[in-house]
Amino acid sequence: MKISERERQLLRVLLVLAIVFLALQVIAILWEAFGRLADVLIIFGAAWAFSYILSPLVDRLDRRTRLNRSGAVLVVYAAIFILITAAGAFVLPRLAEQLAALAARGPELAAGADVAAKDFQINLDRLGIPVNVVPLYEAIPGRLAGLAGTFATDALGFVSATATIVFDLLLVLIIAFLMLMDGDVLWARFTGMLSGNLRSEFELLRMSSDRAFGGFIRGSLILGVIYGLATLLIIAASGVPFSGVLAVFSGLFVMIPFFGPILALVPVLMITFLGAPGAFLPVAILSILLQQVMLNVVSPRIMSKSVGIHPIFVFLALLLGSKIAGFWGVLLGVPVASVINTFIHYSIEVGSGRRKRHEAAALMEDGATEAAK
Figure 1 (spheres, rainbow, N blue to C red):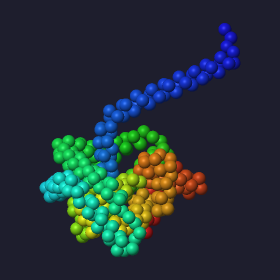
Figure 2: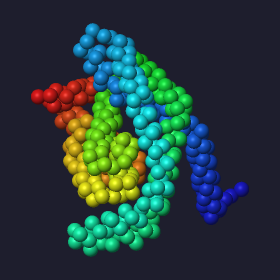
Figure 3: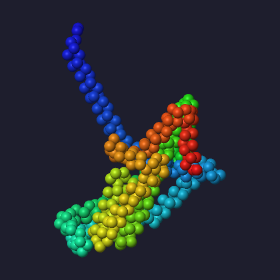
Figure 4: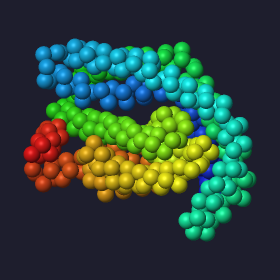
């Protein structure tokens, strides 16, 4: 039976459509499976990040004291449990009290929003700023205060779910403990099955990933802590209510790429306007200046030092990451750029004859030696 050219084209089209249909079905199945496993993946991801944060401290104790690897991990975990106990005894109850008070004062803040808007307008008129904010704030105060109350209630409910939080935290700590204890052993078993050249290159991949992703996580935490403390100083000195809660959430939000700074700024300005309207203008100015300094000066330098690339390339990685992969590109752009930078450097060295393939792993050690000089 002969098939005409038109029939062959039709069969090709049907085959392509069938392949696309099957691919979509496979993607749907995988996505559903991912959704069912999301909780487990989040726990393992958190444990992986936690082990990255603790790894430099464990390594330093292992090298500079008489403790072995197990002893170093146990000492670090003992310190963590002391900090968690102290936070549970002193910090969390006070944060919970402030959240409860914020939820209870939501209607009161809404009732006083009109007066606050008019007082703020008087201050603007006194400064000669030709802006009329009264109609704007008269239209949205109830929504803002309602949003504040809802946010506080949801956050309070999250804090109140102690059993679930503690259980997940214990899982993260246990998995991270095993990663810190046996991660190097498992990696050595894997690389032991490779040839010398591949073993050295995979070791370079591991070392560059450790520096990039671990440095990015640690840099983000440093940024969050500095921003949270600075925000606490600004709003506490200005008499803004719920300063502890606002500082904690500001420090957490600012670590989120792209949208984080906006999320960190809005609650502070909103509660300041509703709870301490006389301090709104100085708090707004100082908070915006703080963000500009942190995001444009401090953050690029922290990230460049943590991941090993110049601040200019930190900006480039963030911009390209946002264009290529949206939120996840922004989140992972800097550490991925650091790994790519390392392998570009390695390829240049191998291509120029200055380094052999089996010497790949020494690239990171040479870079650390040069940086220390």
